[in-house]
Amino acid sequence: MHRKRPFSAKQKKKQLQDKRERKRQGFQDGVRSSSNSRSGSHDRHEDHTDTSDSESFSLQVHKLNQQPQVRKPGEHGYDPNRYRLHFERESREEVERRKKIAQEKILEPVLEAEMEVDIEDVYKTGSALDFPKRPLWNYQMTKEQLLAQEEKCFREYLDNIYRTFQPSQLSYFEHNLETWRQLWRVLEMSDIVLLITDIRHPVINFSPALYDFVTKQMKKNIILVLNKIDLAPPSLVVAWKYYFKSRFPEVHVVCFTSYPQQDQDPSAVFKKRRKRRKGWSTAMGPDQLLNACESITAGKVDLSSWKEKIERDAASARLLLEDSEEEEEDDDGAAVLVEHQTDVAMEAREPSQELYKDGILTVGCVGFPNVGKSSLINGLVGRKVVSVSRTPGHTKYFQTYFLTPTVKLCDCPGLIFPSLVERQQQILAGIYPVSQIQEPYTSVGYLAVRIPVQALLKLRHPDMEHGKPEPPWSAWDVCEAWAEKRGYKTSRGARNDVYRAANSILRLVVDGRLCLCMRPPGYAAHKATWEHHPETAEISALQEAHRQDGKHSSGEEEEDEISSSGEEEDEEKDRDADEEGEEEEPLAAPKSGPSLAVPSRRGKFAGQNLFALLGEDEC
Image 1 (tube, one colour):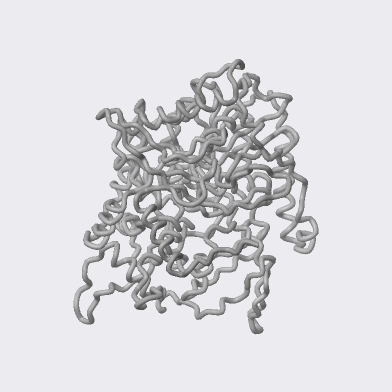
Image 2 (cartoon, rainbow, N blue to C red; image 1 turned 90 degrees about the vertical axis):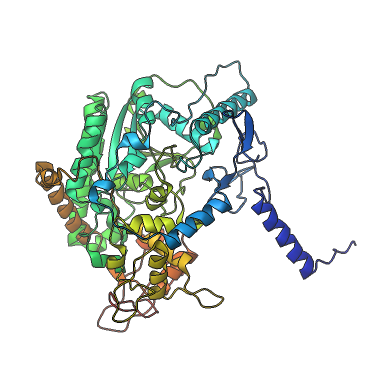
């Protein structure tokens, strides 16, 4: 029998050094997959041609959210990384340049008027900042010819963008053709397109090119959902609503939130809310969405079953207030038919011109990553049917869910459209996975000049001396002060771990505990008008009513203070896990007796934190 050749530690070290060297040079390492093309071709280096100087350049693509290759019974050739986020890879020099700026640039607060953003500044109307469309085809073409034509058109689409704009001008945007194919199919299937945006950054999430394509070329209706409205003041919600109505007259605007939260409190940044299982039934906005669909369909589809479902969910939520035991018994609720779409559904076919086929309304949910598309579907259904996560790009392929026998929902993976928005603002909007950011410090600086981070986190300047005035802050100082307060230390040298501290601050932003909201043009000048607008009082009252319903129907929210190391340590280990763990927390031990750690379904301890608690004014 042939013996294996021994592999020494020196050889292993040399192998790792060679691997790191290849990565520095921008080459792909490890096993090559076929995620870039359905035709099975290997990953290429994403070479695109910049014809502005008649020379070709190599655009290095950074692939995020790698998943382990797990073979399941009955699956042949399935690639879990097929729909990974593909962004442009930043050079080491650019990363080091921004890091130096974060260390040296003094933070100066900006005026509220400078936080106003016009959509024309983000997406230049009529420019190359478009999205790829499916090319024309016919039934005489083979599958290989069709795929080759789609790849050719996609390369031309990227060439046009990089020929018009410099890479430094562009935001992060999707370079994976497979994910754009998902959007094509969802748009073709849908009767109504639901464009979901985050109320904190709605102009980033709204692509005028998509709006024009759906309304003018496809001749379909589009509903704009301003999601997570509990994270913004009611006056700002109303201002954004009227801004989009004035700029895009054919759009229907609906306000929505899946998990109504308590009033924004500066001290709440130190609290971690653990939501109970029954929170989905308290979603705010399903009735507004139903009214918008009824006005669009104009009686062509029977939506009475949807209306009955909303009334039934509201009645059951009231009953749960009276009897919590029945809540556990009736937790499953009505069954929801789920269709997992395969490659057969992605095959090219003639787009159906027939709306409301077989008397069924198909609503397609599209939008950027992390805007709450899957959470919105859970909120409409009234319970969890879609896996959700804080990590952008969690939904890998589109699925359809029958809300009622006549209403079908289609969940599309998040797609990032090309724009001119600053990349730091994209990171703060949760579009880029925080765990994979190479340089998070400038994003912290972008945040600190727009909201008082130092005051909210009660930070002390690392160079502060007793009896002397406080030195000016830089982004690096903010991260170092938070690392000092939280006790983040490097394994070697026990220095303040500023990288981990910066990631921790960005996670607080994504979770909504540090809230940064952009303003529509002219908001600062007319702020008093919006605060006294009639709809502002309505939204405020509606938010408060749903908050109270949410508190009772989902049980009391358990608000644990951030521990000195325990909670953040768990987030580091399980940053890409579903929020399912939070929703299924066991009940806490009574306050009168000693708190016992109770293992949850996932085997984690969910009682009182075993580490010392961090108070608001102390470490």
